[in-house]
Length: 250
Ligand code: PGA
Image (cartoon, rainbow, N blue to C red; front, side):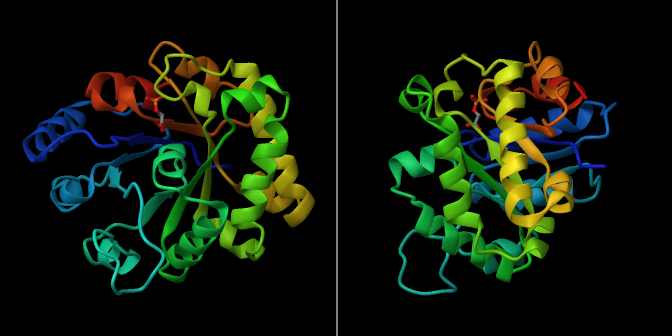
């Protein structure tokens, strides 16, 4: 069976004290579902978050981004070995905000994917169409090319370490969610795209998360769709009760 995963992308929110408070509130919640739980605090709070969660083991702390280079003159950047050295084993790559504001491209993301895999890290790979693409009926072409360009140079075995996250840009932080049917249709298309290249076994084993205004009141319906294996949660991951209501929606 595919893993169910609910990951909280904190984006650029929470200083150290707020991180510690939110984690202690998360630890008071009880998990009644089989979903794996992840949180992605900012770089400066990864280590304290890792320390605060490691003993209990229910919450995995993951990074929001990393650079593809091993080391070197890249001021302000963080690489895979730095993340690994503080216990981080999973990284989010290709979030639409990184694509939009920091010029991340399919090419640079392919390099980041390779660097993460070379360091035995797990990847949550994000992609999704913009509103204009959907209005033009072009969403499948966009999603297909984002996946092909960044991932299709990989061997099938790499997909053991990859989680996909479909996040339509028009639904992120807008309060507008893709309908459960829109999410299901796209997730089924993504699985078909994987199957065409790598076969059914790979396609059926990869978890595909949906992201974009998932809230406690819509999570159950979205997660109820057969090809939706979890969620990447922004705004609602900043409140412990809301986040666990989503975790427990499975
Ligand atoms: P949102 O963000 O839940 O606030 O829409 C989702 C994301 O960007 O991953």
